[in-house]
Length: 241
Image (cartoon, rainbow, N blue to C red; front, top):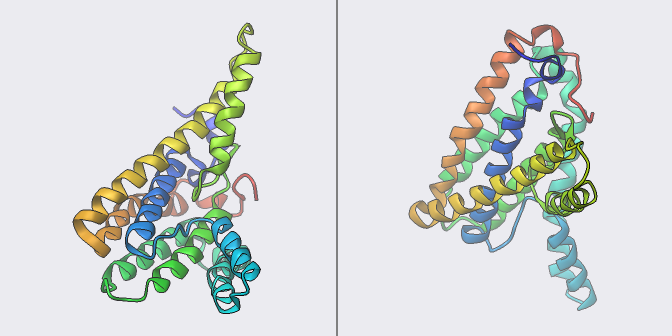
């Protein structure tokens, strides 16, 4: 039997969904770095820094190039902010579920690209879907987390250690739940990066197809919830929205 607290959260907010998504993100990070141009596409801080370096060096064309992935990331957030409600009302299926299907189709297409294809194709596409995912999946059972990068998770691990030190004599250890959530996200991202490195060296560009399986499990689970157990909750927004 589910506890009352568990019932408050939708299937798309479950911890295992977030752990799986960030593991996939770690895989994608290794994939783009090893096989698609030596960069990370899950976040944009690096691209903004590189654009600033190019501008400071007077390399206008190079600086302009970085506007492409940055714009793809902006577009991903734009689309994921406007599309969910119209789709939900037409299909009676959550955007979170549809996004998993979109990601699966994108991964299949990227894996089919020849190794000689321009790396910018994979970079821009992953920028786009990573942005949509980051803007869609915001809280894992009430704890704000990111599913595409780990900067905040690393920070929260440090914060959690400090809280543990301050409350070492206290009987209240509820802070450990939040700390464990962020530590788990960091661990799963690392595991995904390891898997991406191994698979990338063995399978080349087609290695990204490996991530279709975990995405498919999430998609099937969310779709089943939308059509059965959470059919009447389609208007309920996930935490953080």
